[in-house]
Image 1 (cartoon, rainbow, N blue to C red):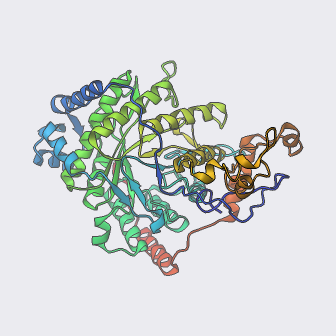
Image 2 (cartoon, rainbow, N blue to C red):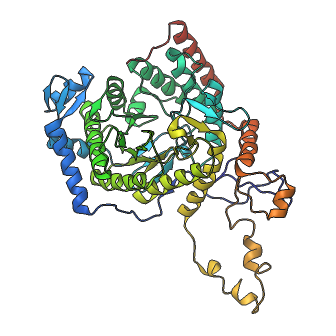
Image 3 (cartoon, helix red, strand yellow):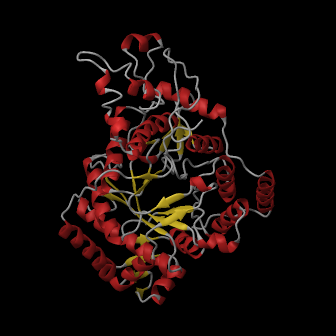
Length: 513
């Protein structure tokens, strides 16, 4: 059972969790951001930041550790001194001209395709964590089981339109891990998949698995993105070997790169919002330029992940005022490029408590007000990304579902205004419970929560006085028990598994450093 377009959980008056026939029909798969864009700086200050980023690339340069990438920059007109690349503004402008402003990510089913452009809104769950945690099994190193379960949970909720790298399955050998993660995504979900950029051999393996499983030709695969990767620059001003190689590999094969400098204010970036975002902007422009040098027209998203550190401990902090402001500033600069762009929520809390909720929502609203196209770490992230929480996935999805409801907009036609079917039906001092408008809509008008409890104190106490995290445990366990999967071709599954067995016997593909 899906939350969103396909269904809404219905409970009896006694609070039973037994689902009944879906009654609401809300599309959570193709969202548009309904909120006006906010600015943190005036237009002239944003333009000055853009100008400073261009000056930074021209005069200070970018350290690029991959010789092939350096060669691409040189051929494109950049000045090169050893591994330092000095990129002229004309190269940046040319790259922004050829980079597509609207991108359609092809998922396993056409109604799962993802439109990425300014104004569209896409959520991803928390990603890249080395640990998983839940109330029953506790905090633990990420495993293959956690990766599979995380995929199942995120497939269930329609408000996630793209998969994420989720939790690292550390019990799977590194040279075989990409086979496992790709197979899980192909067989347990039909959403737009994620592929790690960990060297050309692994990337090419994943591309071949994806092409064959989707049943598309080499030319069709190269013409549209069927997967994406996330590219992090090493701030300040460094593009390392696997990330540069990933940009080239994905661009040459027509697949999507989301460029994301990770600039923590006061640590790897200037301590001010303006300085950190200027650095992030420069690094993003350099990486975007590389994709267009590798293949003009290659799909690429602008991105940023900028927050501050706690100056007492040096630990990353999220959901702070500086994080919020940085998202707004990033949106101003992203709109100067015209490209779809990615921002992030997240939490530094160590458990799924009020701090975690506050931080995630503060970061989320910064992204929404900034007009971000893709919001990653929108659910489940704890400890600044060191763990993902099963309960937090569920409690954060509650908020994301509410945001998705707002994207649908409120209607104000004659039936909604209700003179004939509501206002004229009720006498002064009466009530609207039995009005025709209410009777027609009582099952469908309001969002039905998946974990929030609106019962009064007495009823809540009779049910066991459970807090939201405890209720969330029942939700994720129910999803995993249901084990709903997309329909897949058995022959393609067999071919996929045969490919993996063959490549495993050949030694797999170690990541490149």
